[in-house]
Image (cartoon, one colour):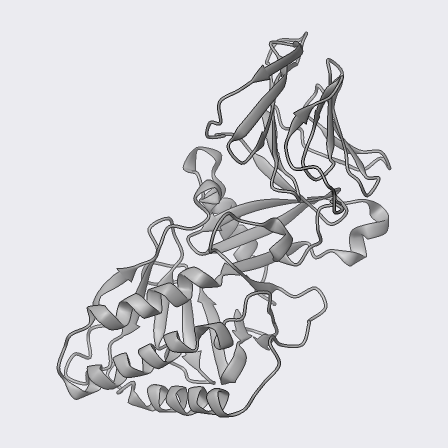
Length: 367
């Protein structure tokens, strides 16, 4: 990298100045079935911010998780009924979902996915989690059911029988799906640092054309926070570095404008994993090379990124090296660690989730 990066930082400053002077819509125009959306990471993850519906949850006056005659009802009005022949979940939208003893997940309309031999955790639209453990024995397959909301966990089914026990909230180590859309649009969420990949696993036939097969969710708060931290870490007094850090500081100050939560990003290049941001900036995912996959921030159509984020459990942000006297160095400094986000969804090796997430990214490549 022997070419100075200052030409990249000049359009950055000009674009930020234009944003500051010219009022603009709060977010870009919506894109049909957008590939990438920006969501908040400030606080608990909310799947309703992923742009795929409210999970079939309607406003309700209920405020807490409670037992029913045959299971539980969540604060959002979702009922979880437990039987030896399966666990049925009924959403306020009217959608019904059944996890059968064989591990298959079924819609009443006939569509199914799985099997999930050891069980499954379902993320519901009101923030509740349903954890179903299946036994390997031929009888009493539905072993345990625990419903979690916040710090409260109820166990309506234990050791193959109905129960009314208050359980401890523990970490789920098995597979999980998010119930989106009307509750019956199920996606597999896997996080690579500040990016969540979503792959559709189940949808009713009449809703198939309303839902994308896959989507990427960028947790924009973590990205902006890393820019704010980065400017305080680089103390090199050279003019090139000072200019670069000044540009990063300006970008961090306008982070809410350039990275608006809820925005849908349009594709910038058909043959590249590159999407448009506000103010003429662009984001690109690089699947090859050093510490791939990486997310790069570009000033317009520049060929060299100004910032790169690694996409992994220990993600970091790197400032592209602006110094001409160090052509062999890609980045300046040791990188800025990102705040922990989407901890529950980070890729787990024992389930080969990192490989699954990378396959989702590869499917966005248009050939």
